[in-house]
Every structure is written in structure tokens, then in C-alpha cells.
Image (cartoon, rainbow over all chains, first blue to last red; front, side, top):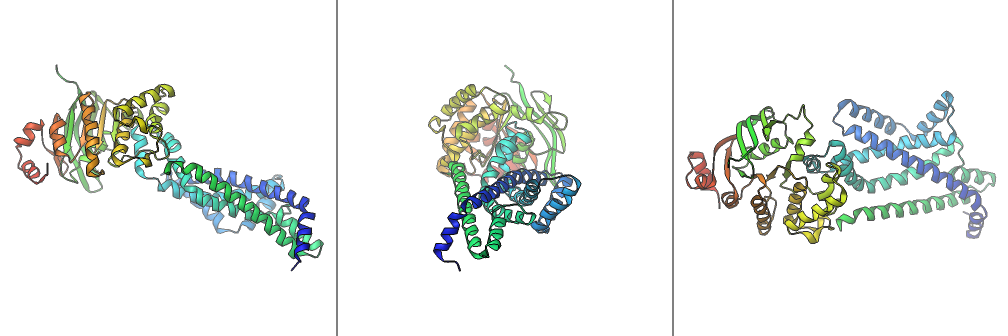
Length: 221
Length: 246
């Protein structure tokens, strides 16, 4: 184990490199979560649409993503898609992460949409609101609120999963830590440093999700 | 003066699978009348009400609103629903919106009423149901009786021609029933056309213009309340009234 003084020396000495890497990790995470939410919502709506074929399409997507390791998906996008048309590394990684997150987020949204009482739909419809308007104004706002706790969980998983982008040589946190570690024959110090960075990011993410949850739960108070 | 026929039902049939819940229902509701549908649980009265708002699909028969046949397969059902309001047993207020936002939601987003005007009308409705001080409160803060009065105001905000009530007091604590019934009574006095599924016999007797008694999916007997309650013709009506608490 590195001594405490050595750890802090390296932590602050290399902070420039790590902060750059952290920004890349953040970019990967934010893009993959935002795109993942859009993908997830889309497939959740297919699933609750009452049109069987659309439901099956959603099932197949979720099965494919949940049934294969994320690293395989990243490699398929990186090596496979990039051989057909040029996909920058960042977007290959982001897209793979987004598709991956999307499947889990789809399941979260499907569950919370279905958990909204049927009476809410009927109340909206009885007031002359169209199905689309009822969905947008009545069902989804409530479903999104209920989805926040599991979504927060998925965001944290997404953040940590972004470390797999290291394997297609993106200079995000994990890659920088292992590279610097082996170059300096000091793996443990760098791994501990990167762990601290992840812990800080997860703490920030948790606080943000809690704040949103608090703001949206105003109607329960 | 002869009253207009607001709602007319002809030969309405409805089944859930093998269960034939509505059998050849014929009925009419006159303008500004209060019609109470009574009968024991499972007699089909709630299903009939839901058919009138097309929340349930009828299997056969006709529904005419103000003399015009309504067919959800060929017509824009949302337009029809703007004319026929519904108040539910379990209120179904929108929990993520304040009371006033619940009321203006449909006028603003369906009828495209300017928000300022909708707010003014909503405040007037809240005053009418005695809840003007609750405008900015969320539904979770209201009692059952207050929720139901908001739900009535919400349905009224669309200025429907007919208001349907599906057991509006059945989910309420006994001490809260009165406030909802008196709100409904005021609506009736204002000339609102209402169809009410209810177990509140004294309300039915006092407020309604017409009683429809249903059993096993059929209309057994109907008539003006005085005659219905004091001099029922059918044996089954007599039996029902004997077992019912007033």
C-alpha cells in the first residue's frame, strides 16, 4: 500500500490529467444517460402501446441488450459499425452506453407508467383529452416522478459503466489510472485515486437526483 | 313548456365476455333533470353510466345526445366527451397538479380557453363548491369530500351539457357525504342535467326528477320519485326498497 503522503502527493500532482479524464467520463455519462432516457422512453411507450408487434420489438431490444455483456456491445459498435462508416470513438462509446442504459431505463419507465392508476387515464379521457394529451400531461409526469429513485440508481451504474470505454482507448478516468499506474510501476496509488474520483462523482450525482426528487415530490407534502 | 330530451338510450347491450351486464336498456334524460340510477351492486348501473361516456364500449344499441346519435367508431369521441362530464367514485384528481390546475387543465389544453379566462372561471367554480381557499393546494392535502367537490368543479369547467356521477359518495367517510350531496343539490337547482348512480336513497328521493331501478342488467322500473318510493309497481322493486336503509 502507498503511504498517505505519497497518495496525496500523486493525487494533487496529477490532478490536471485526472480532471481532464473526469470531464471525459462526465461527458460520456451525461450523453449516454440523456440519449438513454430518450431511447428508454421510446421503447417503454412501444411496450405499453397495446399494439402487439411494437411490444415485441421492444422485448427483442431489451433482451438483446440485457442478454449480452456491455463490453461486447461496445466492441461491436466500435469495430463493427466503425468498419461500415466512420464513427468517432467518443460516439461509438456513448452510443453503446446509451443503448445499454436505454434498455434498463425502458424497463423502469414501463413499470412506472403501468403503475399509474387506470382512473387517471379515464379522468383525462372523460374531460375530452386525447390519448396523446392524457399521456403527456397526466400519465408521464406522474410516471417520471415515480421513476426517479430507480433512475438515479441507473445513472450511477451508467457512470461506473463508462469505465469500459477504456477498452476502446478513450482517455477517461479508468484508462488514465491504469496507464499512469503501469508507466510509474505504481498501480495501487492510481487505482485508489481513481476510486476517489468515482466516489466524488457518484456523491454529486446522488445529490442532484435527491434534489430533483425533493422538488417534484412537493405535491405529496 | 316541454323539456328537451338531452340523452336517449335505445336497446343498449353490453357484455363482459360471457357476462351479459346490460340488456336492452331504454332510457331518456330530459334537460335539467336529475335522474338517479339505483339498484344493488352488480345490477349494471355503473356500466351503463360508463357507456354513456364511452369509457366502456357498447356492443349494440344507440346513444343519442341532444337528438344526435353518437358513434365512437366514426366520430371524434373527444368532442363528445367535452359535452358529457364525469365524476368518479374515487375522484381521480391529478395528484401532480394543484387544485386550480386540475380545474383549468382540460379547458386550457382541450378547449384552448385563454389561461387568464380559465383561471377566473375556475375560481368562480371553486367559490361555488365552497373551496376558494384551496386553489393552490395539492389534492393530497384535501379530505375526501373536498376532493370530490374539486372533481365536480373540474368536470363543470368544461361546461358539459350532462354530468354523470358514478357513486360520488361511496368512497367517503359518512360525515363527509353531506357536503358533496349539498354541492350536487345546488348544481341541480342551477338546472344542470345530471345522471347519478347512487346508494343515497334520501338524496334520490329528495333531489331527483326521475328514478331508474336496475337489476341484473335490466331496467325493472322507472318513474318520478314520489310514486316510485311510495307506490312501487314491481315486486322486485318492493323487495329492494324493503331491504334498503333510508
